[in-house]
Amino acid sequence: MQERAPFYSVWALRAWHWLDKRYALQRLFHALVDVPIPRTARTLYLGGITLFLFFVQAVTGILLTLYYRPTPEEAYDSILFIMNDVRFGWLIRSIHAWGANLMILFCILHMLRVFFQGAYKAPREMTWVVGMLLLIITLGFGFTGYLLPWDQRAFWATTVGTEIAGAIPVVGRFAMEFLRGGPEISALTLSRFFGTHVLALPVTLAALILVHLVMIHQQGLSDPTEPAWPASDPPKEVVTSDSQREDVGEH
Ligand code: HEM
Image (cartoon, rainbow, N blue to C red; front, side, top):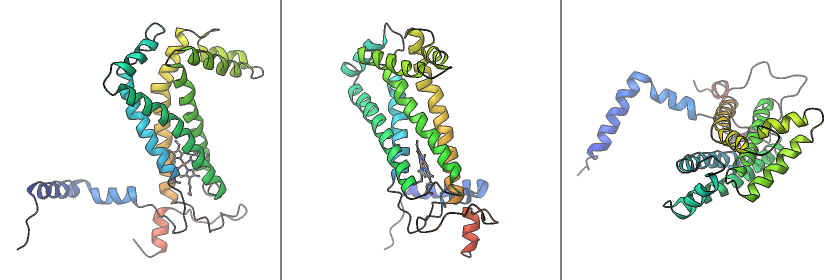
């Protein structure tokens, strides 16, 4: 006897068809996930792992802001509260701290993989440039996040970090005071670092990741066995996932 599908899967299927008829969801889904991947491509999943770690950081970071208070009087105590009193607070904070280190590590490993396979060459120069910006922002997360616990280590690390900026010729003093919000590390530095860490950097990183992924989507992954575009004679037609699909007779 043929088994009947459970009622919820029938309803889910109906809902899918209903929406698909109206909004061409299948076409949209294929347009999003159809990325040509050469058989010889070896990404080692490093870009994907970095992306996953970004999501982990976003979720644990949002949870931490529920209890963290960015003022010199309260910051350290709020961290103690998260570690000792909030249920699983220690776990969320530890995942966030480990995740930060791992994200930097995997971002650098991903960059090295791209470099050693020559995947930065034409036509992927701009994907590399956007990647560089992603790495700088990822490091910026580490720098701004380090001050937030407002303990001795945080204070002195930021003192040294901002002094390094102060050593830049000509604009050094301006750069240091811009980072600190004044000549010294103070409440202004803390709120400045907090705002940058939880708003400015995440929004910029998310937007640039989107650009990075759209670029990869449009070109497909590089084939390490294929030569790059010769600089003197690039192909007349830009290779996109659509034109590649047409090349193999798909429409
Ligand atoms: C937040 C940081 C980053 C994320 C989330 C990210 C994500 C990704 C993903 C998912 C891919 C496709 C699969 C893969 O190669 O693993 C990719 C490819 C690529 N990424 Fe990144 N990436 C980041 C940083 C960087 C950096 C630092 C660079 C170089 C400076 C870079 C340059 C590239 C290039 C050139 C490709 C195309 C590789 C190919 O076609 O073989 N990315 N990235």
